[in-house]
Image (cartoon, rainbow over all chains, first blue to last red; front, side):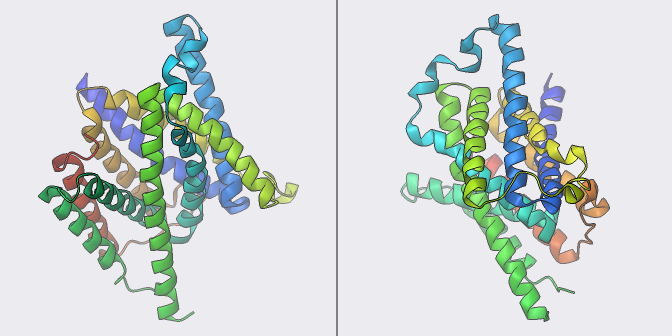
Length: 152
Length: 161
């Protein structure tokens, strides 16, 4: 049971990379924004189909399956995430053809982790534990080291 | 281009990617809020729908068409349009894994590993028609430090747990 969970979690990560690679390839013939448009169109259709299928199996095909009761109780800003995603996907395509998959992945992860630690720092009024500080220091050291790379 | 100009543009790309990562934190916060009110599948479905509308608006503003001249389009393989499908699989796989014994922290840590493994293979072999890239010792050391730092935060600081 937990083996399948481990494989699913790994698959999730692999698909993040695969998605960026595919969108990057599409952007070469078009543009990062066009690539982001197709990413959202195809993703929306896939999730609509997946949602409808899951709904049909688990809930007998009620609307509740796709749009759960609590959907409209979310704060308005929660819906802005989708628009951020468009920029995020376009940025990934723009970057991956310029600096490659590894650099795009690690600098994005670095930004995600450091901003996460900063959010925690503000929320906890400065009371964050040593793992966050050690982790952030390691990440910043990695980013600094990458900039020493000889170019040629 | 001189060596200096090259590394300066590399720094610009690194900062841009770092900024995209910060944007991801804000985006995941929004999506988590939606998932909390409804569920993970709805959150991602709604985010893709809103993203689709936002993408159409941006294309109109930028005066870009979703397709180009036939000659250019012919060189784009059909599978290159499937990035969104891979994204949808990510959502379902991670939502399922996060609800298992792994929890969110375990899912994030393994997801990070999966992403790094794929990106190494992608640069090594030039997957999906993108350029092959030789990785230097600097790249690999930076990768190791960033992964170690991220795992420290995910597993020991309880970020996301």
